[in-house]
Image (cartoon, rainbow, N blue to C red; front, top):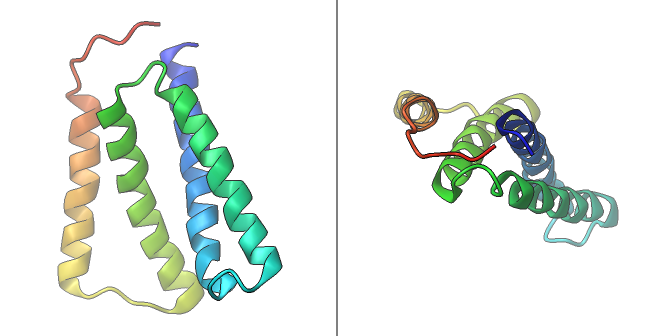
Length: 114
């Protein structure tokens, strides 16, 4: 697997995580079957792909990217789907998360085998 493939796997894993987490509210405590199945299948696929991305990417970089992008994306899902508007402090914090994810990925000097 190449570095590019690892990042593609990570991006798909992030999309699946957003799908899983975005469906959680609709599960109503896992009492609704369809959203519950969506959540379970999506998070399982997410973990599978992340495990493959970690064959190339360091654990810390993988998890920081996955969680950081996921937090921001789920906040956007909350805004669009549930009309949950973040306050200024939340927006500032999310901005710091994005900056942190960029720094972690751009400034990573860990030797990555291709």
